[in-house]
Image 1 (tube, rainbow, N blue to C red):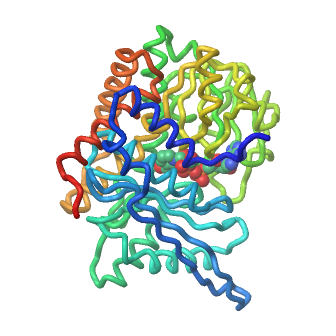
Image 2 (cartoon, protein in one colour):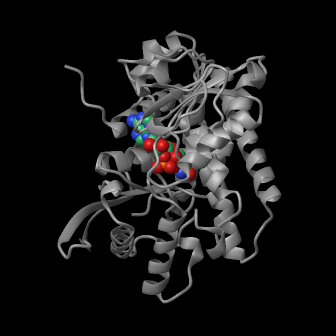
Amino acid sequence: MTKAYDPYENMLHVMQTAADTLGLKDSDYEIFKYPERELKVSVPVTMDNGTVRVFDGYRVQHSTLRGPAKGGIRFHPNVDMQEVKALAAWMSIKCAIADIPYGGGKGGVCVDVQQLSEGELERLTRGYTARIAPIIGEDTDIPAPDVNTNGQTMAWIMDTYSKVSGQYTPGVVTGKPVEIGGSVGRTEATGRGVMICAHEMVEREGLAASQCKVAVQGAGNVGMTAARLMQETGFTIVALSDISGGIYKESGLDTREIAEYLSVKGRLLRDYQADGVTHITNEQVLSCKCDLLVPAAMENQITASNAEEVRAHMIVEGANGPTTTEADAILADKGILVVPDVLANSGGVIVSYFEWVQNRQMYYWEEEEVNDRLQQKMLHAFEQVYKVAKKYKVSLRQGAYMIALQRLVAASRMRGIFL
Ligand SMILES: NC(=O)c1ccc[n+]([C@@H]2O[C@H](COP(=O)([O-])OP(=O)(O)OC[C@H]3O[C@@H](n4cnc5c(N)ncnc54)[C@H](O)[C@@H]3O)[C@@H](O)[C@H]2O)c1
């Protein structure tokens, strides 16, 4: 019987391998195996019909050694403590690789947002914020959007936190709408970072974007933006999927038109129609004939049972944890290069950092400045990961974890253990 997928176990395995390659002593990184703080809350919500439902919510702070905890909030029926712990740890690794002064955190509520009205969603968000308010703050733990949360969700969090603390506190969350202290460029930042990594990978393989066909799993904030920006910069997007299924067109999908189509709430790809577009399954998107695959939906998508089917020779991970450890080994055997999540999707947290800096200074930048600085940081991180991976003859994922662990361990040694 195969063991049930546990994202936290997955993370520990990758970290252990990186620690072994670096020759670290157990005592150097033992503390990173355990989150600093795990909070579970129950959030009562008065539903539109007058009944009360109670939702499970979580906030985990994996590490605050390099700065305040930082990481998104997810609303999804699969959210549980193991998932949130893994997502929080990945944020510690990601912020260390990007070299921004944050630790890692993550939060979530176990809920199917499709079943909630706008009013119920607002009450749930505010109730959850009030429950986690004692441990979040602009100097302690700063949430951001993740799956099924967006600028509106962040606006409710910022407002609730500001009201309960009695102080206007825009820096308590990032990914806010620009009208209330968000940063220009933040909504697109994760997808933009994926696009930047895709170009870097392709160039290092001696290819041009115009030669590459791309399949993207997930048509949300990350996947749709990445697909659109990649098409705008020369790639051909042949396949795209969302929760309802996939679409395919060998000569290339019109991602701008699809993004506009999906911008109407409730619309799904299964209902999208256009000349030459055929409907395929989600599995077929992962295994279709393409050069580059961008999983940008959820974790645990490329697994031991479908990794053999992947035909792309490069993968750029937009989602967090889309590839299991077993699948990673299969992909490596097949010679498929993987730009890991902790590097490829770090554009979001990098611009979140810029947003927080702007909030603290009450001084706002132009979009060009945000995008230029994002590009600089991503390219620098990519180069460092690439160099370490080459030097130690390991995967880019291992290279990325090795850099992160070195930085985390250095911070830990300098700060020492209190008591
Ligand atoms: N939003 C960010 O800034 C950000 C930053 C870093 C990483 N991420 C990660 O990127 C991933 C996507 O986040 P998002 O913000 O784009 O979420 P989102 O809610 O905006 O979009 C998720 C998309 O994935 C689709 N989807 C869900 N399950 C699917 C499945 N089984 N097969 C195919 N499609 C499926 C949904 O229909 C939707 O199109 C997550 O892993 C998230 O943790 C997001």
